[in-house]
Length: 180
View 1: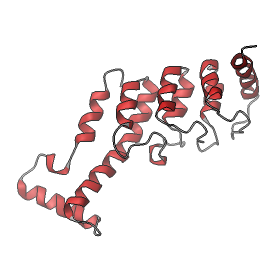
View 2 (view 1 turned 60 degrees about the vertical axis):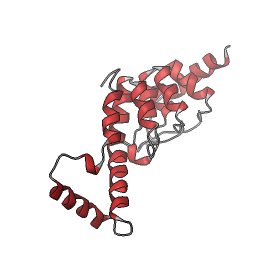
View 3 (view 1 turned 90 degrees about the vertical axis):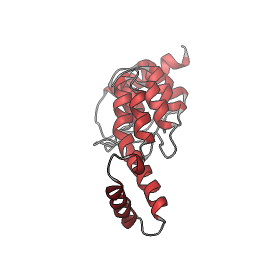
View 4 (view 1 turned 30 degrees about the horizontal axis):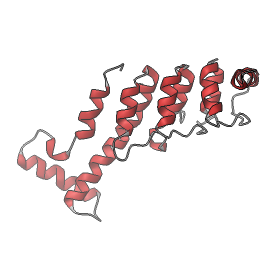
């Protein structure tokens, strides 16, 4: 996934139950099956809820991959879709990392700023209590550290990773940030 792959997100976000290629009878069966899972709403509303659930489920891996590859257009397009929030818990990876963690570690401040512009929680923690600031520090990305500190990331937060590198890098970034 690289620049230009935002076009993948559009068909996914436009996917509807009625757009599935099947016979009319098969479509009725699919709609009936979906309605059985959402018993408190009409069949039409059940299909809409199913579509939204599918979009939410699929968007997490796509957003993290876009963050890894620096596809800011994809991240922005995905987060403009109703129901898709960049720091929703359902968008976490296997270690509870999110697009903002990956962007911070990349060192690409524009990628990181895109996440922050979309209201990513800059103090969100992964399973090891690692925050985007920790990811940037461990990756040695002083410009990303600077962006996070200016956005009020908590420099005193402790992660579960035991390393002497983080305080040194944060100290350097604070010096860089203060302009001294």
